[in-house]
Image 1 (cartoon, rainbow, N blue to C red):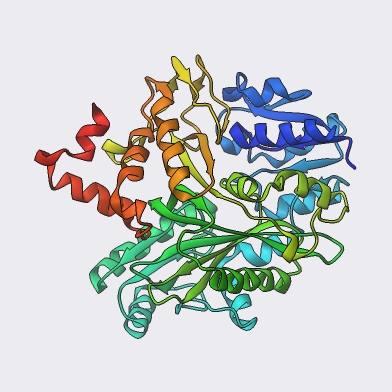
Image 2: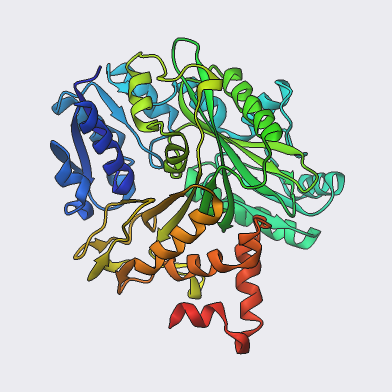
Length: 464
């Protein structure tokens, strides 16, 4: 087992990893930017090293600075968390060349699944269903128009190196396609340093369902069931639940086995997530694979009792999975997660950095809070706006919803604007309560209230 691990991340995921290491008995090293000097992960780690200025490019994406910190503190391994360098194959290779274990999959698997086009083709050859679309990057508008005519509108433009909803545009006609193509390419270039995009048929009412997998170096691979990530804004997840309320056990088993097959196709090791879109006819399609720990991994931990971060560490250390057989993986109850973002939902989800003057976290049975913020903490403007993950566990979905409603009512975080009021609206919405939602739910919910202000606009409620 490792004696010391460097956590190459920030915020709540850095805290999550540090806590897991402490419970195993592993010393930790935190890295931080100048803007994060007062962050909790800096204070709770055994050692901390400042790696640069506030911008990510000068700190959390600064590979030489992170490797230098690892060598100076003499660590055995690096855990990248999610985001930043977590899915950077080059970073994984550098770690290995420096005899530092990268806690995640090998660089080949990261590279194979990191390029969305390459991943689609790999899955197609393996017999895993994919959505109709291009097999190569789209070169120009003429080619884009030919493709759209063939697969028919609506279509979606996606960045080949995409993630987080960037470089994505939905198009319903030729005019929109031509204008969106260049915009998507420019956005992809700015976000990922890669302007390549491709086109897929756009499913208008899909559910977004993902399967958590674990694989060790001894040939054991299992899936830890599913998470429903359908509630999104701008193609970014906002509320998740596990297991999905619409899957029966037959479909769950079929999709889970497909996820395992996908992972085996690229000789995957460590924790990963296979994401699918499920259409209204009950057909599912491979969307992508995330070669890292997921933001929403805590939901799976709540319904299975398996600590995924500890499993990651043990797998990287060469140990076997704690549970090696699929039929032994437990599942119990229902869990829901609300991502609490420092954003103003009433103003197009604009980020709202600033000082938190009052912070009261909810408590009581069935509540888990993963956060790095506290009263007096200043949310910096340089990073992702998520500041907390509020998770609840109940014996069933109805109880989980009730616990979450109570938790949100108890949660005080002022004066920074957050998504808490929006989550309250989601939870009381009849369609959500009946699990009759699709990926456009938030867009439709906001639009519905915008058009009926006299009856109590959600936007009015959010600004009160």
